[in-house]
Length: 539
Image (tube, rainbow, N blue to C red; front, side, top):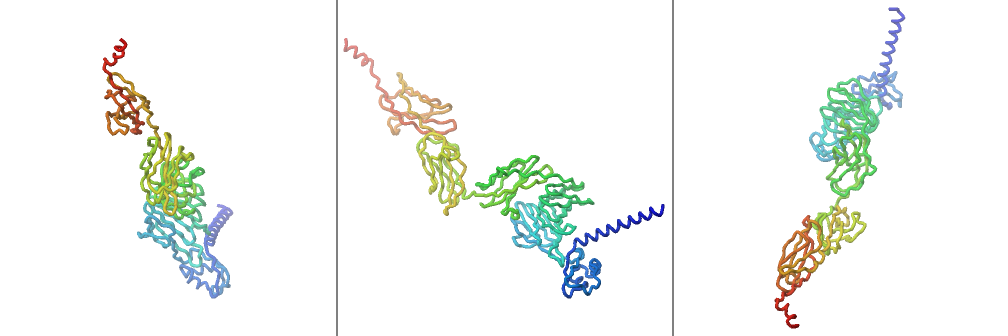
């Protein structure tokens, strides 16, 4: 081989090695702290107070080109690689806990601290949010199991910390403060992936078979457990890492549900969140929090359709966060909305008339159950469902019943409870009511030798009760019964005055009121010779 070729290859190899060493040194320098020399400081003394291995002080001398380790100018800055510094244990503070969240098997409370090695668990319907010393936050979702593998800082620096979380199963959401240096100081380990974070907001869901990661903002580096290179997961993208397989390529997250037409006031204890469908979604998740940052999540719901239900919350102001879920199980971008729950005091249960029931025209009695917390009730009857055409309004009924005179027609009525302090609850659901007209008067009967025939108007499918009495008060009933058509044939009774009344029975079983009593005069039947008497007189 010619000498000049060998020379150039050796030179290239030397330059490559120098560049690699230089890059490594640059990284080490970048991930370092700046220590300001104080009076009396020596490198040997700093090695004793700051370094994990005090004997490594010559490395600090070499990096900073210090001529005399015993005499260092006061105020000079020394760059010390983090890898040389002594670890300082740090603690995370619990800023929210609910539903039996625990650390090391003991239930946690707000402001409690947890340290490196702690095992955190959240059962169903439970949440826990931790705040790290640098302000970063991690929220465990229901049914999560997370261990704090590392949580420490370094001597000589209040700004740099290491935090590593082993997500054995479950879901977490994180908001990590921006961090300097080339190395990720905040890491998430799962059974199928390692995620390095340098300042971002993201979600991770994991079990023994796969890990799903979704970026809300920023970028993280994701590496499969057996992989050799990182995958950059950027804002608005997600990926899946499965056991024994290469990490999937990132894919765009689904768009957030459109909340433009979403209601913000909920007046029932079960909040029904009806979302606009999202293209490509196979499911939806909603969360309710007490704060806009979603540090204090108090409830969540998931469903295969854009119709979520949340129960068990006290009245108050909340924040709603909803997102769509794709076929990979990746949860999409967030849609946030402030909402209010005002469902109490609850309206009473209705007794009568029954929903969509009927009543006879005249005095209609309304009755309802005694509602918890109610000192009095609001009551309205209207001709329209919007309650703009009011017939009756009463703002403070002390009893749980009232009577209203109503003509025949279609109505709607509703109730609401009011506490003793004047706090008004929401209106109950409007209830439809049909007020039936009274039976028309029965026309006079037709008579034949043995019977009398009555006929009146009716509706298809109706049956009719009848009563024939010898008095207007119907205390002495002569005949009664039910017929299937609006006509009645009765044997002719003895001559005299009688009273007849009719009431209709609708096909749905509603029994109307009796018609006004109709007087019926049954004439006396004269003997034949009396009918011939005028002719005899003429003769």
